[in-house]
Length: 80
Length: 80
Image (cartoon, rainbow over all chains, first blue to last red; front, top):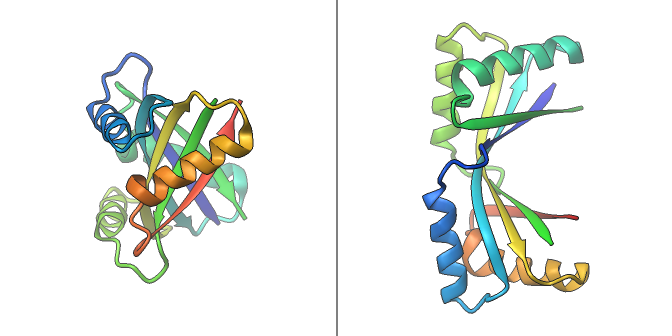
């Protein structure tokens, strides 16, 4: 079973990387661009075939390693 | 209008960051984890309100800055 994890900064947390991308887009002439925020996408294969158990396992991975829950949110999407 | 851009490495392109995450998960006791790949997620506000034009603009941003199309794929999702 495949899982897609998206990790994004919580609202209110400064995102200098997103700001840099926004600046670069303005410099390239894309004037209509407002706020830009950058997050992470992690795709992983899990051996577990039961969707509920797979989701629980991936959630534990998020809490323990993939996301810093003090400043980041995570979302899990199971595929296939 | 908001756009979500996901940038992922093409198949066959080595992903050392994903490998490192996989190793760390194994070390933490998650034995059922197979391949791990890491990508980027970029969320941006665009002033354009027409969905087709907004998508075209974001696609140009991807080609010019957000993705390295030699080794990366990108996907665009418009929200609201």
